[in-house]
Length: 345
Image (cartoon, rainbow, N blue to C red; front, side, top):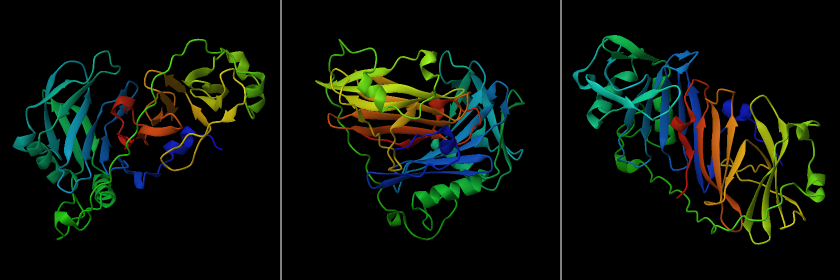
């Protein structure tokens, strides 16, 4: 039985194994890479980090299929639409001029704009960044964001390795003479079917004495915070409980249990993680009875710009890992832009 701590996640001990496939992360200079269980890899090059968050970042993503081409997008801080020109080491190829930047989402703080590069534009960029020093996006002639390319070559080489492209003509950096057919097929995402929704009326609002007796190692003053337990009906006669046990500056750790309808016969709940090591304590949880989904947010720091977001679905007999996104570096990237490290169908 173990707790998941944000320190573990941010330190990069996030190799994951599930359904016979692996997920992996790496950090290289100004770049981080996340690869998921179906060999889709995402490399992120970070812009400057200021008091208001990140000035932007460059994202390069490629799925695991042998013939998949990389895609690229640039996120820049700012409100309203804009037109950008990209420069690598001061030079701007014609394909990377007059690029539209549109608001990424409404009511987002800080406001971000997204520039989706076409296949031609991505190819023009990929031909320059591995050997470049700096990428700059200009807006009306002024820098909107600068991304150091230090580490980009190593990051792309990491992607080639994890996608088993090294030595083939499909590799981004580690190219060789082997054909695309030498790249093995990407594994399929596991299939999950949530249990049917069940009515939630008449739930107990406090853990039973039997459940409280199962709690151990909790903060002595945790009850003084007044945090209500997270309780939900999974099936007739089976309840899920998440009981606050300890806290830090920005994380609350919950102990997890399954009980009968009255809160009796408590059993410690072990949640699977992609690394194969189960957890009975997780941070900052929520449960959606409509989708039978348990979620949590492992914050790496108070700003919430690094760590992991996890989801598990109740299948009728167990909680199965549904999805995970990770940001291994604290660089001001909002959670909605974090790369996927585990996915299901």
